[in-house]
Length: 72
Image (tube, rainbow, N blue to C red):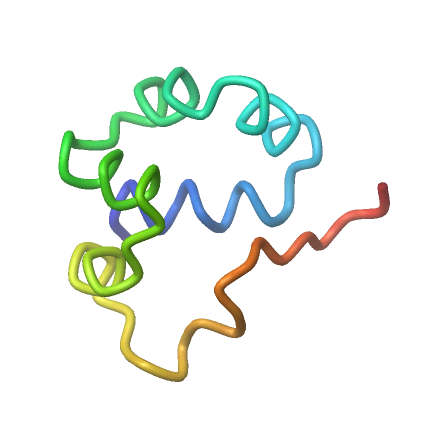
C-alpha cells in the first residue's frame, strides 16, 4: 500500500491524527514519509494526482471530503 493511501485511511479512522492534521498537515505528511509529489497533491487537493499516486480509480473515492469513521 502506498504511504499516501495509508495516511488517507488513518486520517479517516484516527480522530487524534485528523485533529493534528488539521493543525499542521505538513508535519503529519512528513512524519508519514510522503514524497514531495504526494504532499503537494494533498495540499492542493489534486484528486487526479492522488488517484495516480495511490492507484485508486474513479468510483473508489466515496467523496472529495474527508470521511470520518469516528465519533466527534
